[in-house]
Length: 391
Image (tube, rainbow, N blue to C red; front, side, top):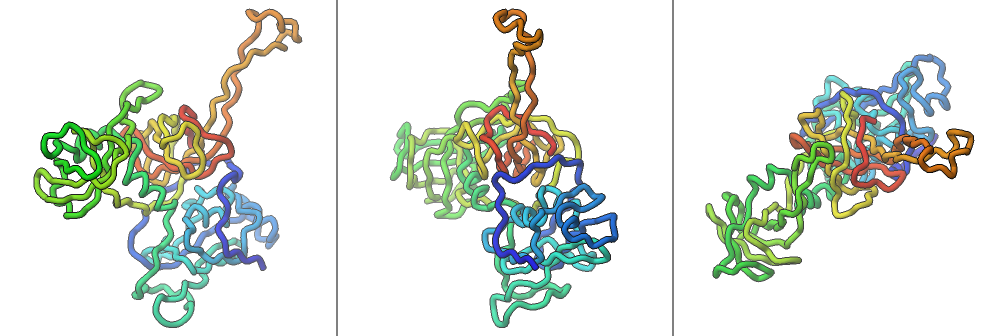
């Protein structure tokens, strides 16, 4: 029996093509039983083959999928999916929920997941819930609401990464720039502000005293590489401040500054509230877009944020997984005439090299015309201009 008690590695995992998938809406309450039905067409219990691929479904299981896995603090739904599957975005396709349980998606650190076979089909279920915070050890899973205080359930992607970006964004959509809170003036009619200065802001009605805000300067526009339309703007971190006085025009005291604060600079709550109740799945229809901006870097790796020139009007939603495609470029074929054109540049034929898949992006916020995504896997450096496609 194989048992795993650690998270599966993500970076460098094999990438496989994927068809259209379904979508499951997640509820926010706590409880439940989780089952993953991995259908097989053969009734034979060839365990090695079953572990390698779900025969007939085309969904590849991880070759080293364990019999049991203990959910760890710091796990994500993506990493747990990779424990049992080679391609994590197949999770909703193989999801089998007990219809008597309202919220089967909640998984907590300490829960034990078991891989078993039912009538020839491999399934993963929550075999044992984690020990309750108060009294007793782990208890056998039963289909009932848990009334004890609960540990934080796992999220689809690392919450702290997304929260850090939302609280201090480096890419802004047009709606944030057009209607978000902003600095309207400096106290004593100063032209600029720095740490220790007081500023006045509009759009913070109802903000609590001592509530902290990041100050972001609106930078160069983000243009769609295809249409050249402005879809958003780069954001430059200025500093932070705390609300000192409430009102239609609020007063803030600047507590930190990296550059001069100016009139018109935007304000974002440092502790941003972010919905993370989504699961990885492929878009239902074809997507053909591009990475148009990156979070402070020109070359990207795992868990960095990108802006994509496709949004909700193109069918994108949080949880959608996209394959990153590096453009192949062009080369001159000096052998098209048996090598005879090697010295005759004008006769060389141009050849388009194929695109190469270099990673996976998961959308965590979709606006109308642009989306924000997180790099989940990367086999090579990912750059601005790389294409994004349905995986």
